[in-house]
Length: 293
Ligand code: C2E
Ligand code: MG
Ligand code: MG
Ligand code: MG
Image (cartoon, rainbow, N blue to C red):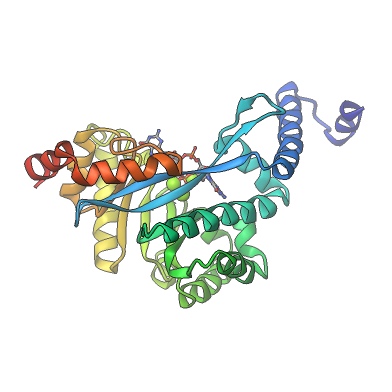
């Protein structure tokens, strides 16, 4: 019967659109059940800082092994589905709960990252009570806003620039820091960029992948890095996978790297041993002292 309904909605029949739609419906319904059954969990990807050779910040990324769909569903697949409906609101708060709980555990163990980044969707940020809800959840876990960074994509910002900037200013006043995610893929206005209370700019992976050979990407990364330096925010490159990319990024003046070259996203249990090992590791010491500096 679902099929019958869909056909009356869609005037131009296309098998592709039809199967895409039914797949989205399937995923949306599975997300609803998964929220109830607590099937989501978070992994954490370390961010390397050239200035002190440490991994003092991590990004929280959601993971989902769906019982119903009997597979691992990538956030690239289910986040857009959640974003197309109001499901992203519930899912977004579930993420904040999971990360808040994790940070509170780290606090008890006296493990302190400078910041843990959380991805925030456009619809979440546009909620009138977003800041209040965010602060209430974190407070419940005894987590202070100055332990959290909020990642907003460039596209999100430019959808409602004035409203977003106002909200981000209030969040910054409360102690959160703001990072712009996937930078370079949207259309930022320089005017707005100067107005955002920004502390970190994350260059999209698309510009890093072919950095060795792609002259245009080299120019773009250099331009973004120079701008970030002039405007006084930290610039991080997403998705560096090779030593050559890391070296180039360091030379260009990039401050931080988040990419498979150093570490993939991992469960919190692996994260602690990763950090411990990397801070002692001869391999990393050699790399830092010998190759980069
Ligand atoms: P993002 O926020 O830009 O996160 C970076 C993505 O790049 C992550 O994919 C990460 O695993 C991947 N990545 C990092 N380094 C490398 C690398 O060297 N090579 C390659 N190939 N990939 C790398 P992931 O975890 O699959 O997440 C995909 C996107 O889904 C995220 O992009 C973000 O937009 C969204 N997302 C993930 N978790 C959440 C969440 O909790 N809430 C919201 N709203 N969105 C989320
Ligand atoms: Mg992100
Ligand atoms: Mg990104
Ligand atoms: Mg993204």
